[in-house]
Length: 126
Image (cartoon, rainbow, N blue to C red; front, side, top):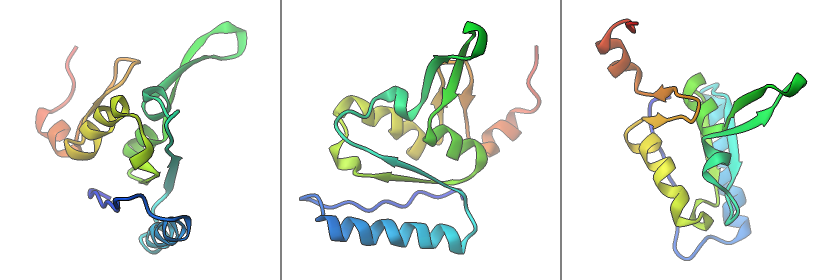
């Protein structure tokens, strides 16, 4: 969608307010016909949950699986981060680059960059 919208509060909102905010986010996504990628953030959420996880596929082959923020960026969908205020401090820089700069280095060697910057750079060489 090309924009970042945030809603936060201090102290954290009560469950009813959080549910209303979630409802508004999903209603907006339906209105603009955007695919929604939802992450319930808590103190156990890691960088791997947000960026990529390495796992095993059939036959013992290692594969990288994109997290919801990466899938949202690649597809142009809407990312809902519910409970972001509960995230550990070491997780926030991972999201900061994607939300503010629209960039993220991925563990599999790819780098997410804004479409305008990728188009300006021209076709990849090599």
